[in-house]
Length: 572
Image (cartoon, rainbow, N blue to C red; front, side, top):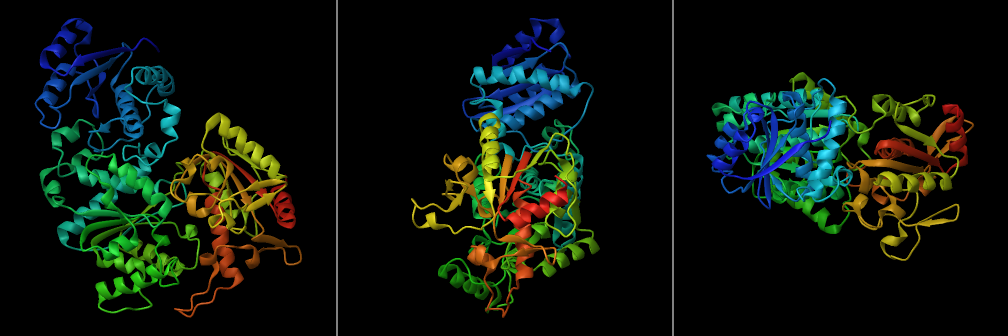
């Protein structure tokens, strides 16, 4: 399918009427259109473009726009136009050249007859948009960007949309009934917990400012929420999203700064919330299991701040107080995103506490599970395989459809595979457990990791490391990659894990684990952590690293005994 008609007109009543009159076939025919100026854009679809654009001309929010672009084809139908509209919204939002003015009444992923053929033809259209300067860069670059991966305009699958509907209904019920029960969204890596949280923030920001008629244009399952009683509930509704991971927090802030209705001030750390004088109607916590309990913080200033926040919020300091209690004290309602198996250090919330949060949410019908794999093309079969890889009974290696998994016999092999995929696909990086000292943190010329003659440094930045210019030749740690996607991940299991042939167990090697905060005892609470307890956290770290790759993962194990054990277990 080729030969798209792409007509650019002034955003004026007469120009649209003349366009329609020039060809009678344009009357009552589905089209996709954009209305834009140099910095903002609106994307829509309609079967009567003259009437729809006349409505937009009367809208105060669009009268400053200058140009209409009408995309037409003789084989368009309603489903095709809805799909193309959804894709254009995603690409324009992630490109960053324009601020997308669309409401997030809901973009969902829908199938229709011959969808793959139509989508192949869209590629020609997207190339035309790049050539004409509507998009500033090719689609593959846009898709690899953080703005695309964390966009509030991402399409939701049916499971995510259903969970989001349940969360909205529960919030409306709680606000109307003045109740306050924490909502839990639980899911494995790659099920889209962060995307649902960002989507929810955008949807709630749109609710009070978008008319029901404008929301209905998108014909989504969320349109019914745009009614007067619901909109009144969310007037002057103060929200924040807490991102415990420093690396991810800056990325989400950048996304919010580009999105109408959201602002980077909404993206906070748990410490930001604690010291804030604001009280919030809703706080969403991404990776809530990464909230901390009282422990030795990364700096003396944070140790002092922990005590000061406790005293400010509760009138006294208590060693038992966790950062989750800060969140509850500072908000009427909470949405907590949880995956207990992604807790990576003893200072995180105790696992018993997070398990209780999940159990309580289930009892009060506030628990919304996500199970469908959205990141990894190997699907849930691959996630289950990784979940058991470092257990007593790993699964045999099997095919994961289009997903590329390779157990490497040398680091040289792994590095070559990652370099090859980086040249073809981009966004391919090496990752490792914290099994080497970070010497280059203080001495920028120091070498951290030496493997088979290769001399490598740890990540030289924590913030947005995956997109930094030096990242393809560096090794990323858990602290730079949790929450991010890659196309391909080359994962190195260091000597922090080994294999005991006598007991037949995988064991933790404390002397080869260099994350001080990841293994230190907690004298404040009188806690000492055994090797078996720390083993569970380190296995969680490798589980996270091994689920970062969208298209594939390559694995190399440094310890010869563990490498041989896994080779035998996987029957390679």
